[in-house]
Length: 129
Image (tube, rainbow, N blue to C red; front, side, top):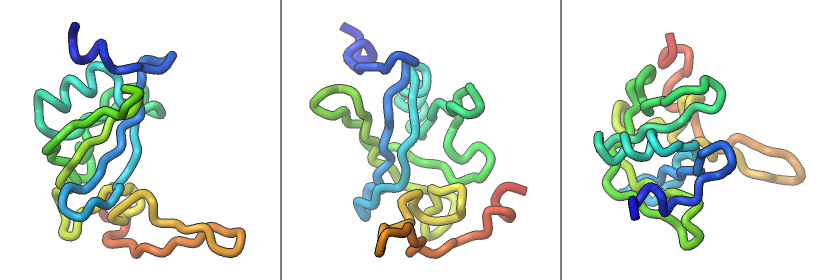
């Protein structure tokens, strides 16, 4: 059986993919992959996702330069979530979020409200000119 056939794709042919920084263990982002995106990620050693908003493959960093080098790919026990162990390239410290932050998980729930607690490392207007 093809390893791609063992993934439990949803009704749209997608699976959630978590990018985790190899060195720190930080969860950087969650995105979606289809079969082609996962196969290309394996082929290239760099993260390729499926952009639901654009309806096309999206190589992480294609516009921003903030590429994810993939070191290891894991699947969860239900075979319906992918975990990528990555090094975030293109900026030091690494920027994974389109807001210019290290991680997309930069807000914390405090007293019934979401509060951004992680700094912007680079202005998104400078990243996406």
